[in-house]
Length: 252
Image: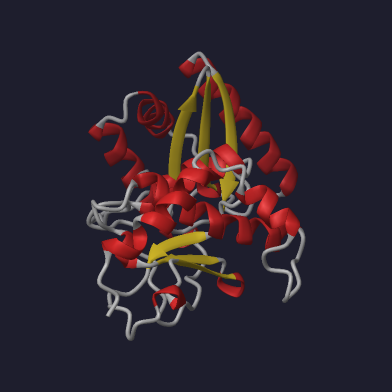
């Protein structure tokens, strides 16, 4: 995932920043064709308005998956297009730098940040970075349909009292399209598959809210359970939660 860096210069913005739907479809087609030709593989692109993850790529088998901000649809600079190819194929520092420069030059195209109050939105932790986990789960289980959902670690702090089961390991906030994960999970003692399971659980909430408009009182309906159990390590995560989680942390 490309990070944004403050740079002392900016490029001229694209002359037509607000492309029509037809133009965007054409731009998307042209970009996909270019990437497929350069990479020699099939390419799928998901366009987002996400201001925290401007670009991410994964490769599964003979196919590349791009999730990128709509600003890239108007990119016609050969150095930027080449950087996209190199980022996906080799992830070179030169490609990352060029992409950061391009993002910085298009910063005016980002939507204003949503008001999130005290909710944390940093995805990178001491042990786990939640954004790559989210991106992979989104591609594997949700057809890359949750690109506008943000994810981050919650605030540091210890649970109070002896009610271990009252601790929420994750939470989804529909109005803010935000997933928050408890920082207690950002430890080496916690296996990656369990962190993935918690993230996946909250992503199911986001997916159902987006597609079904789930009503209060039907949070964990049969469809929810069905989707949750599709996670490859669901049973292992449940077993670890029951057997290991209570002994891993001092909740008092």
